[in-house]
Length: 317
Image (cartoon, rainbow, N blue to C red):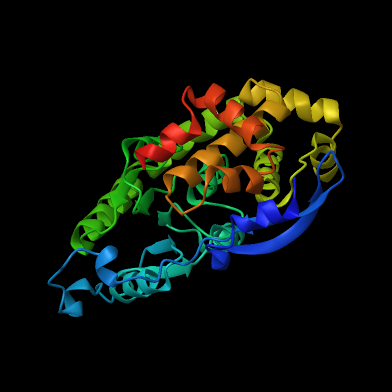
C-alpha cells in the first residue's frame, strides 16, 4: 500500500484527521495511520432545539427546599451543553462533558440520577460504547439514559434501545418535552429503584460473575479499535493480569464466541456506526482507521456480518 495513495484520499478534509502512529503492511512499506477525530458540532442552535417560547427561566427553578437531582450530560457541542446547563441547571445539578472518556472517569463520583447521551462523540468511546460499558456495571444499571442524536434511522434507534437506553430523542428537539421525559424517568426511578436494583443485582451476578474483567476488556477494546491496528489477545490478557486461556474461557462463557470474533464484531459495529453517521468518511478510510488489512477484507467481513455490503449501507445514508 503506497503512502501517497493512502494520504491523497484524506486531503479533501484534512481537519478531520490527525496523524496517530505508523504501521507496516506485509510488504514492509511504512504508512501513517490516520485516526478520525469527530469535529464538535458547533452549528446553529436550531439544529439542536426546536423553536421554543422559553423566555421566563423562573418556571424552571426548583423549590429551594428540594434537593436537586443530578443530570450527567455527555454532548460534544459546547453550545448545546451550555443551553442545557443554563436551562436545566435551574432545576437540576448538572455535570457535563464533551466526550465519553472523561464521563466514564467521573460517573462514579457524580452518581447521576439520569444521563443525557449523544451518540457521535470525540475520543475512543462513542455513545453506544459508553452505554454498553455502563450497562455491564451493576452500580450504574439503574440509571435512566436518554440518547440525543441527529441520527434518526430505525436501525440506530433500535441499536440504542437494545444496548440499554431508556429513550431516544432526535435533534432538533423541544426542551419542554425533554424536561418532561427527565422528570418522568426520575420519578419512575425513585418509585421502583429498590425493587429494580434487587432484581438486577441478582440476575447480574448469576449471569456475569466476571463483571470487572468484562468491563476492563471492553474498555481496552474501545481504545484499541481506534488506536491499534494489530489487536492481540496476548496483550489484553497481560493487561488484565490473566492467562490467555482464562480470558478466552471467560469471553466464550459470556459472549458465546472467542475473543477474536468478539473484537471483530465490535470493530464491524464501530464501522457501521461511522458509515451511518454520515461523517464524510469513505469506506476505505473507515477500513484503514479500524485497522483492517485491506478494503476487500473489510468489505467481505462487513457483508458476512450484516448480510449486505458496506456500499449498500452508504447509499441508504
